[in-house]
Every structure is written in structure tokens, then in C-alpha cells.
Length: 146
Image (tube, rainbow, N blue to C red; front, side, top):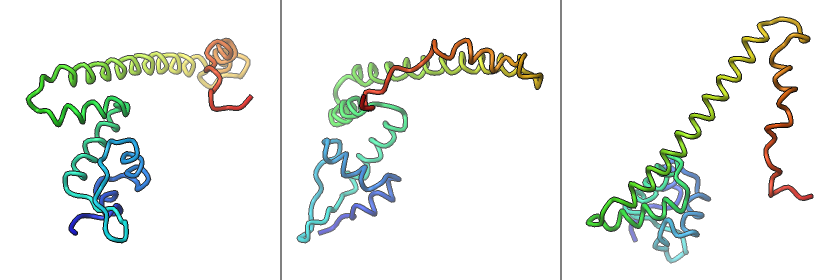
């Protein structure tokens, strides 16, 4: 049997072995061939698919979107409307995040200018944080036990 073992695939793709196993488990990667001793062996097509998944994840696409994009990739004659919709949605998310980060940067710059190494009593950093400390608390984590 020819193919690459999971460790080689992981190094080539720049991912960890558990990531490969997880992607197999959720169907992003097909089940690989197995040796007689039940070790996984991957083909070049598996490496290409894993590279596609990794790049999509680096761009911030959620697993459901990656799954859809993989399915679209297998139908090259199909319209690219769905792929375009997915990419546009991700672009909107990125633009929204950039806007939030720019607002955060502006606020931090204002705080820093207001402090300018003066005394704590006149420090804008402390003042702004005290004013807004309760207004922007994140919602409680669903993972924490009460």
C-alpha cells in the first residue's frame, strides 16, 4: 500500500494529528485507507483537501461554510453564486470586526492621550475604565457552571 502516514500529512499540512482525526470524524476529510495494522494512509488528494480546509479556516470560515465550499469544489461546472455568498458574508464579518477594532483603537488612543504620565487622580485611563466598567461586560459564559 502506498500513501503517507498521518504524521507526515500533519507535517506537510502544518496541522496537528488530532486536527486531522477531528476533520475525519466530522466528514471534512474522507476516511483514509488503512494498513493491515490499521494505520491510516493518506493520498495526495487528501493532502490537497486538508490544505484547502486549513486555508479556509485561516481565513476564518466556519466549519459549515468549509463543508459547503468543499462540496462546491467537487462540482466545477456549477455556478459560483453560493461560494460568492459565503465569501461575501465572511467579508462582512471581517469589515465589522475591523470597524469594532478601529473604534477600540480610537478609544485607547484617547485614553492614553488623556493620561500623558500625569497623576492617577487625573488619569483618563482610570477614569474611562471606571465610567465604562459595567457597561461593556461580556455575557456570562455558557460553559461556566453556576
